[in-house]
Length: 307
Image (cartoon, rainbow, N blue to C red; front, side, top):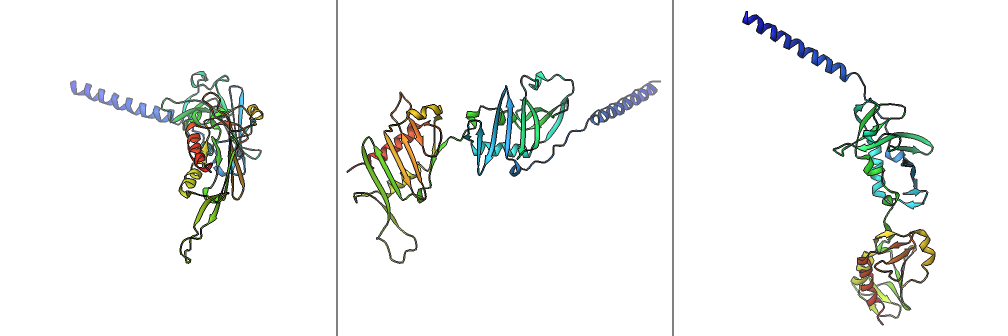
């Protein structure tokens, strides 16, 4: 009798296990994950993000990306990360079909809408909620669908940021080897440095040697000029100022003009408290120059403006 009960219990256990597996299989087959159509990063010409009543548009113009409506130049590294995320985006799981969108920040008040275009052709549209607890996925919805899905990546970190954080903070850049003339003016004192080919060295040298001289003929240490140019090869601003401030910036303390294939100008204005306003021919907006960069410039100017 005892053996029969054990067999009976074993049989019930087997039936229960089979039932559970069948149920699980049926439940997993209850939905099919959507497969997003492929999007190539190089095809994308604009990205549009609407969130909290504001719309940010990034548009490709030549090799640059521009933030509209302000017409600011966007940070190329950040845009590249956006493009890579968009082109590799995939839906990984169905989270909910209950219609409770608020918990995922996918309700009308909190959601963001991401649109990606090639010209006027809409390549992708996605409704974006908050990042999942792991921050490796984001809760999303697809247009016309009620389900909440998980998509790979932390989309809010990339796309739901203030426009000011998308700006390219590089305000001045030159290629040092291209510069042949540097014009410097500081509070009425002026100096011009000219790059000339050196007459020293062996006649059979294949590499040309250059020296820097002031316009009065005095030599200046080439290594110091090279260091100065390297420091200005890529200048990042501390922050941008309101564009309206540009009209009030008329009398710089320091003006540096670099000439080569083209001409580039950097103007530094009197300090306002602990802030150094500046203008660049490569930036439409005024900005604050970091103190460390000013100190580098000032150190060289002291020598360049010596008689």
